[in-house]
Amino acid sequence: MALQLGESARPFSLPGVDGKTYGLEGFAGKPVLVVIFSCNHCPYVQAYEDCLIGLQRDYGNRGVQLVAINSNDDVRYTGKIDDNWQRPEAVTRRYLRDAVDALLAQREPADPITHAIGCTIKWAT
Image: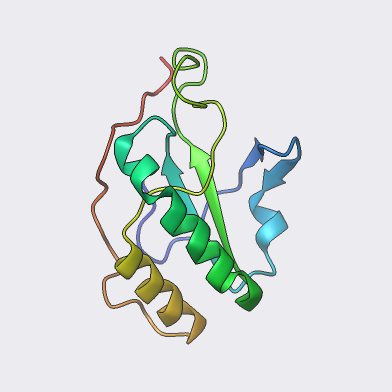
């Protein structure tokens, strides 16, 4: 079930690569929370990893937090490259930076909706 533009995010509680558990409420004080759903074996994800790490580095001191959630079935896809853990991942640099800048300035992003690219999500059955 997809969220509609302007709809509140649904709560989650997920393990992080650091062994801690994270939930939506833990980021309540952040002015901008970027949630990215992806997987580590996707070539698009791998290509943009450094970009997103740089984005977090550049905007973290302004309260921006990137959270990457591995959407794949971690039972059937455990043999893939670290598919059971998630690092900051794939979206385009220009769009994401423009959107984050707009949100920090309390403006609507110029392009509030984009279409996903890359590998499909491997859902658990």
